Length: 294
Image (cartoon, rainbow, N blue to C red; front, side):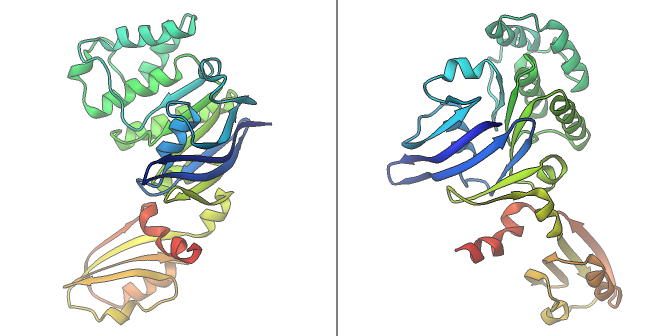
């Protein structure tokens, strides 16, 4: 059974780009990734799906019901975390969450307390006194307090420190095991790889492909930045799998796809002063993928 079905969804803003013919399904009990560079159309798709904005054409259903026609009914079973959260600054956290819970006509006090403990959130603080990360925690608790059947997350980890991100991922896995379906939007490949079963890749408002995360994991991209004692010729790293090669003085950087041991053997033959190996963001690793699709 598909919890979400999107068919040829299009949203235009006059001459400005929106989304065009977006189509994908999210199965019940799945953690589905929605990935692409910033500005690629992820938030527009999600806001259209939630009827926060209306589509120009196409259709979308949640729980088998049209997202526009049955929007109020559907939203009772959805937990949504937008990419940016804004609140009434003068309210205390517990007052805001109590107000949010009132829309669901159920006692959420125990649930709010449990989630606040997991996310290390002080319920007695005023919203205005919270950091960006703590405001994001409020959004997480707010989105999950009614134990929704469908959780929709738009760039949910921005503002969270690495330790809190880990706690958040564990929380999502727990909710998924309890039966919740999750749509997870991100521009960070590592987040999607850790959580999701399948992914839809979007570029410039259009879906490029929908595929299993196992296929993406086979494309083991890494971002290298190397400082060397002596300046290197650009052709030194002329290896299969090296892309986006840049040389700036004694610093060389590139994206590598393939067996990391091949690169390490090449690095071992030179004298280096520093080395960084990171997971690149999607803007970098999919640049050549996008060019191929074009």
